[in-house]
Image (tube, rainbow, N blue to C red):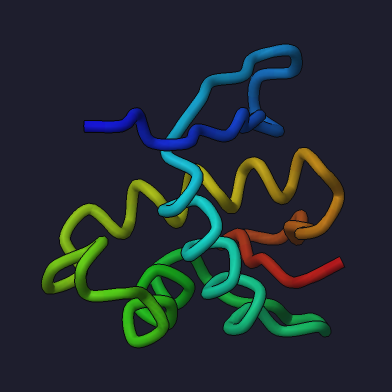
Amino acid sequence: MTARSRVQVKTVNVPGYSSRIDAEKYDAMRKALMKVLPKRLPGMLQKEMFEAVIPYLPEVLWPNGKKAGWWAKTVQLDLEAKGLVKRTDTKPLRWYRA
């Protein structure tokens, strides 16, 4: 069995923190998020974002969408830390592509 490739992710909420996660799942979730997140305000609520990515995820990686919410949040925070995704400063929070 070969080791799966991993990618380092950051979080906008904890500057300087990083961890390594499965690269295949990261790439699939990144593509799904970038597909569903709007380019303009008002943006998308977290719940909407989590639901919207499900149809774009490989079933083999997320059977029945299980654990997709954790992955969506992790990748969203990484993309935000990299400046590719922005959040509003309204309540409730909304996200959109930078």
